[in-house]
Image (cartoon, helix red, strand yellow):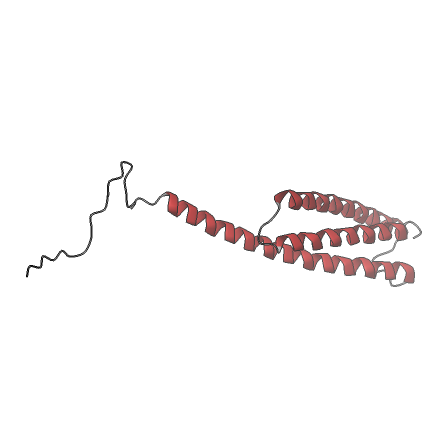
Length: 148
């Protein structure tokens, strides 16, 4: 049990850092133009933290087996309080992750629409003038000859 508390504390600390990174990620994705370098740095940091959290979670599970304890640790108030904080951070980061997903989908949709516009303009065969400057299209409409 004495080894479990520091593990839970490390998990909470890592989750706090993850929350801060994800808030910054949401802020960047809320902008109309994304800075890909900054976003990549945030993504790398987030990936490292997720690996760290996974490591501590594995240590937690091992300690639970050795101590014959199980989350949420109702019988140990100190562990229970720490577990509640960890659980709250997980809920917050999950909510932030859903926001990030929604914002990324919006940016992807906008990029796909722009790509379609660019492709449509690039493949437009009904140009007004040809390469030599001559008109390719015949005038449309009716021709009237009026004499007075």
